Image (cartoon, rainbow, N blue to C red; front, side):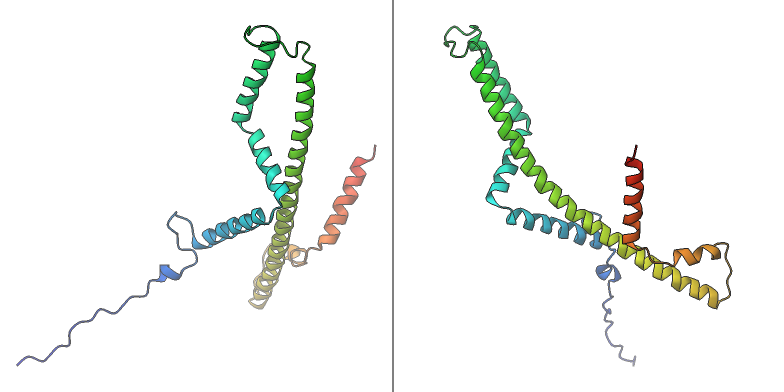
Amino acid sequence: MTGHRPPHTEQPRHDVTATSPDRPGDAGLSTVLERNIQALHDRRRRQEAHASAEEKIAEAITRFTGSMLFVYLHLGFFGIWIAANLGWIPVLPRWDPSFVVLAMFASVEAIFLSTFVLISQNRMAAAADKRADLDLQISLLAEHEVTKLTALVAAIAERLEVRTDVDHELHEIKRDVAPEAVLDELETRAAGDARP
């Protein structure tokens, strides 16, 4: 009589890659990178949703005037206008033979288009300033973390009595960077370069 053997049950295996933050996603990107991209996309969508009606209109006009369709429409419009007033199209009367009306129309259009472009540029400049502030904060945070890590590694090396060729540089590396001092130095040098 053979002993009864319990049926073999396969133990579920824990998928380590399923919870790894660096696991490649469906597009071959890590989940951290995908999360960052999604966060930037969501922030841009919120900024567009919070834009005023005037800003949205100016953005739409600027986008349209920067397209090739706008160029083609102008080529056709001005081409017909010039050809008709030069008498090249007999079926159309010459309503602006001196092209004064055309020049006035082009001038007024240029004024409005430049205004719309400036409105869009102001909005883009404000967004660029926010991104620059974010980059600066991240850079300062990264510099502070690297400084702390350098101090920690230096303490470990000193505890283990490990000597390196860069011991004389560690004192400077372990110091936190003061943003105000850096900005003051940059402004001082810029002012010196601006002098004749």
